[in-house]
Image (cartoon, rainbow, N blue to C red; front, side, top):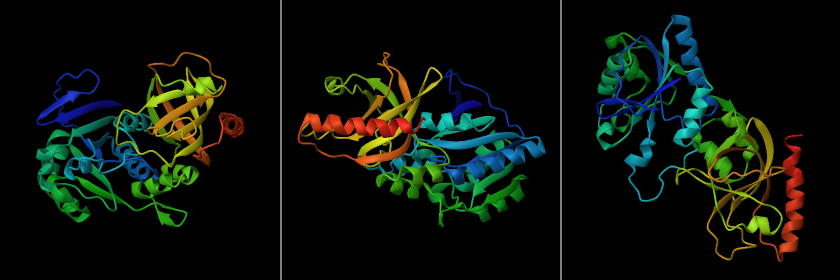
Length: 321
């Protein structure tokens, strides 16, 4: 999969940073933020890829970085908690057999582009769209004024066909990024994973911590999140897994403030990789959350904490057995 980035009027290769001349090529295209890349998004992208194969077209995903709401709502805090960071999103797309990922650096100037201008300038002139696939609730252009009806009208004008994919229902309710955020906030990892179609991922660089885990016999990799707006699920202990050098390892993962060992600690993400003893400082780990073990709690002594961690570890190990 080739990844290019549109910033202003210029297109850069994401890997080398060099300017590229991107010529329009007959393409099947889909457009969206695709936060979380849940089963609804995957249905849209899969439909687009099927159309591309049927008609001998290039398959193209157009997405945005940063998330448009982070620009448009312009608050000091994160206006949307991201289910996927940019790198996580790219990693997901690489598994989907997409030919081209076209990333638009979203800013205030771009947000003022009308739906008609966006379709003409980007989808048609830059990418050569012949088939456009979107979700049933898709909106595009300034103030999301463009709808499926608008898209079909512009398709007739510019010579591309339009496919609108219906909603996906899981357990009686439509799947959406908002629904998944609510599930994660309640620690309902298994339900969130069903909606996602894959385990929820938290990735980041391993950095040095206070080594409190080493002192009580449960060394942890302290994870530095690459994006402060990454959505963290409910505080507590989770069963997870991580792949290191091609091997899967069970993980007992803690998200929270460590109330037993720190009085007023900051929120941390720590991973105790069961059975692993190598050096990980500086490495980027991709942790897949599998289930919620228990909520965060304060213990009266380190001994009580260690006893509970032994129980938690056994539960975490079961997920890879």
